[in-house]
Image 1 (tube, helix red, strand yellow):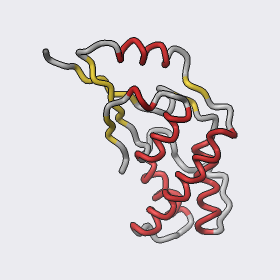
Image 2 (spheres, one colour):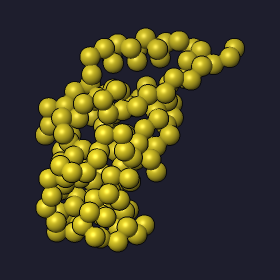
Image 3 (cartoon, rainbow, N blue to C red):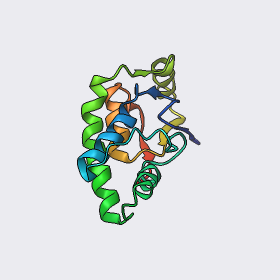
Image 4 (cartoon, rainbow, N blue to C red):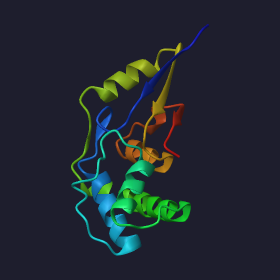
Length: 141
């Protein structure tokens, strides 16, 4: 039996995090580099997490070394885990029902294709109770 692959993005497709991701980015910048910034001029939609971090570091003239990017992302993921429960995010309408129906079809494999780092993707989707629907993912890391 030939299988079909269905890939899903996360933010704006499956969930709306209520601003948890942006807030975690702002807090990570302060935590790691002592800089406060509302990030209003940083392109976030459609970008990978590492691309967003690089843009933030460049804006503040912080070297975009692998160490700085990894440290920022470590802080971001930790802070995201704290921000998700504080926000009024949600699973988008119909998503749970759709995933439940698709998961029963033996010919379908559900996966993720996202700009989120894997740890952030797992945090977000676990928080909203849908991580277990996906067999694998292609992430920004």
